Length: 239
Image (cartoon, rainbow, N blue to C red; front, side):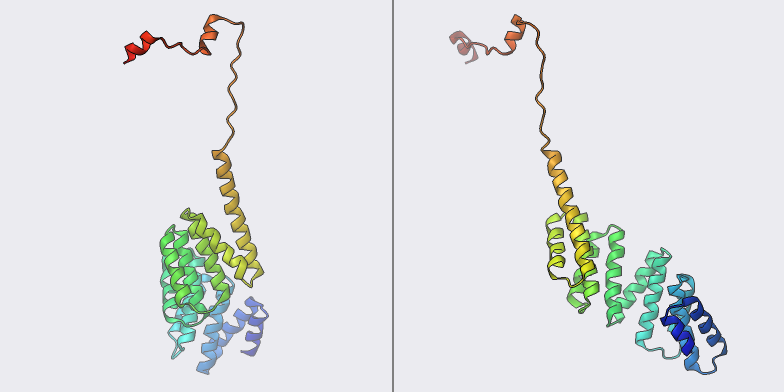
């Protein structure tokens, strides 16, 4: 199992997968057999064999006393794999399981992923609700806080609340320790400002004065520019 673990960490996933499969077949020790199943689950996911990853995640969950941490990891692998297969509803169920039962960074990832699915479905209010719940209960995971703030700004933009979107992005620019997050926030902020400027410009397009060519100096033309003279009699008639 040491060789397979080295291959996994290197990473040389196809080699690692072969080792883990051999180990699963030959291991007489239940502990080694469990290690093989866990290894196959992780390696299948890294190799984007999502159906294989889901299959082995199920086997890991059904092992004898796998422990909560491993169970949560297996559900997370299932969730990510369903997402990779575009099976959004199944992914949502698994991410909710992880968000509810996990107490570590997996829960933060799951909350973000749930919010992102709602955003992709156009359910911006629900996406915001999940993000706010995460901020209230989710712990200190800077990567997922930044990702969630960026997603929150996208929700505000989609809801045409540019003020809140810009405020949220500015908070990332001011507070984030991640250069990548700051760069993304600046790009999103610039895009909002550019869209606002374009909209403003479209509303204030200068109107070209209409020029009417005139030939000569006819009475008809003069009438256009001569105000009618009010007479006392005309005013009386109006009254």
